[in-house]
Image 1 (tube, protein in one colour):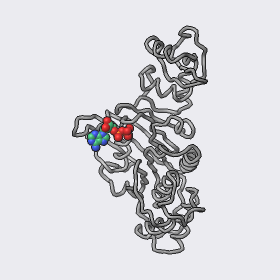
Image 2 (cartoon, rainbow, N blue to C red; image 1 turned 135 degrees about the horizontal axis):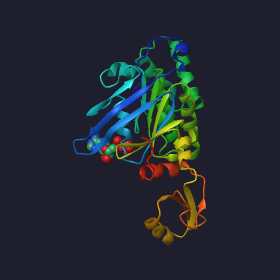
Image 3 (cartoon, rainbow, N blue to C red; image 1 turned 30 degrees about the vertical axis):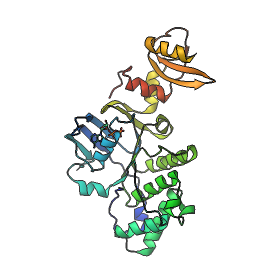
Image 4 (tube, rainbow, N blue to C red; image 1 turned 180 degrees about the horizontal axis):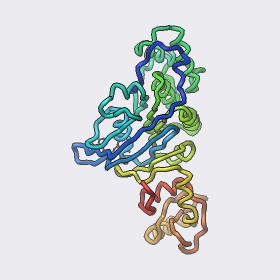
Length: 314
Ligand code: ADP
């Protein structure tokens, strides 16, 4: 399902996303499902304008948090406010300000992107044909789909479908856009294009990007949280997190067998294949042996937070 605000018959200019300054405040949010899984544990987060990355492994609680913010499910305790608006009790008003692209969404196959957007715009009450046309064309342009607007949605690639999902979510001029794991399954070029589009949107409204892909956050997010097992492990700027790790990440190229031995002795952050060998990054305040100091990357931050190597301020 894609939620987007209800639309009046404003002029197209009124539908352009305005640069707004809003704040989403999440306090003490907890959720335990009926099977006993505690998906969110006392989450506190403040999210302002710009592109915010919610980074965490599968099962971390990202979708639960996104769905709660999108008014689609209730927490057990805690509060969510968009400025003064109580998100948990004023669902109807919040939905007018919110665009949500869920992890999976279906769409009709035998209709073109332009026809579909036009149709949704009619459902949203935009009665003036010219206004509707200008609005749908602007959204198709913004999501890089203008050239393929007459193609059937069923023929769209994964990336095109995702961008169409964003166009739909933007139809009501939301002040906050939530996208849940949008880049999973996209090829590198499509992923880049999608992230660029989000980055541009983030200049105007709050965009929350939930992802398990560290590179998504590294490339475009001005702020982020790392979440694991329902707990926020870090909140801040990616650059500040990298700064915290500076001088404490050491690298060494090892064999596969050495890697498992090192794993018992050292606090390994990450490992990657390089020329048939494995380059490991180790967290340590001092050179842990015959290692070479290396510049931290966001993946190091991610694992330092998840493995609790660093008491990052949450
Ligand atoms: P993420 O989006 O980070 O992968 P989720 O919010 O989907 O995480 O899930 C967090 C935890 O809650 C997982 O352990 C998942 O299995 C569990 N969970 C999610 N939705 C439900 C549900 N409807 N009923 C029971 N458990 C759920």
